Image: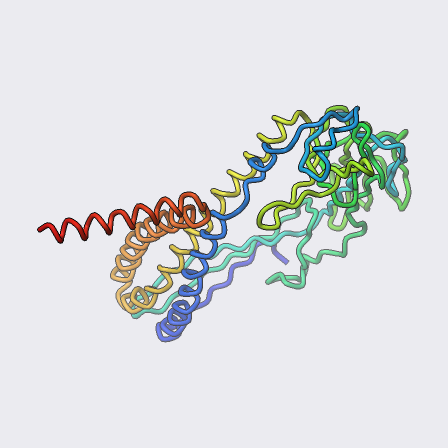
Length: 373
């Protein structure tokens, strides 16, 4: 079978009109949901601000009693007496191990090219392209448009994560089953640290390989395995959590809006807070973008039937569609900005009180001015 397949379909004007009215319902839902996304996003907790209020304690001496049951941060050496390994990685000095598994598999790429015809019908040319790629999540080839000749077998191996059960940061214990760990780093593989089982072979310093091809010329179904780890000890680690002084253990801290802070960072306290601030800001703008796009697409869908009706003459439909997109873009932008500002005020109690007082003062001034006139 060819690795590229093109399919041409035509949809009548009447069918398109009916679909556009279904789009109105979907568009209305998207429009309403966009307000919820924007409102929720502005109320998310900035964990960096909570972390800034944490009491800093040393990891080598007992903390003051005033720190008990409080949010704390501590910087020191994260270590464990345990040695851990994986089926194909020998036991060693690791805090945590991730086995990364990829399979050489078929990937389907779909591209549509649509043309509106005189009379309102629509012709769509869909091209399916099949490529061979290394992937950790191969697609189910049964869902391919052309599955014959593009069959993906099941994954031969699964990904896996192994962590030590007990670890300490200085004199304090850490609950490894709940704490969020820092970034993993890739390790080099060699005959001294790997276990060559289940037909796996050492391909190079990065991968173990299993299959009928080679790492340089793989075939469909071949598997490669790599490892990323957190070394033991981790010399410069900063933890945030709640201090249980009686048991000398650091546990999860729960703050406002059920927020949780129980996390280890590689680096200093300032670096950790900066990382949390960057993450918060990144996701803040991502969700703002998602809310805006939902609102814009929703509004365009609400006016979709107009463009479809105009498609009887394709040029009129194109003009109508462009006009709707232009107008709804700016309407969505204004509504998104207003929603964001209102949400910021509602989620901020002090700002909300100030706005209410300002409105009351404005109303009183207006009434007095009117009475004087």
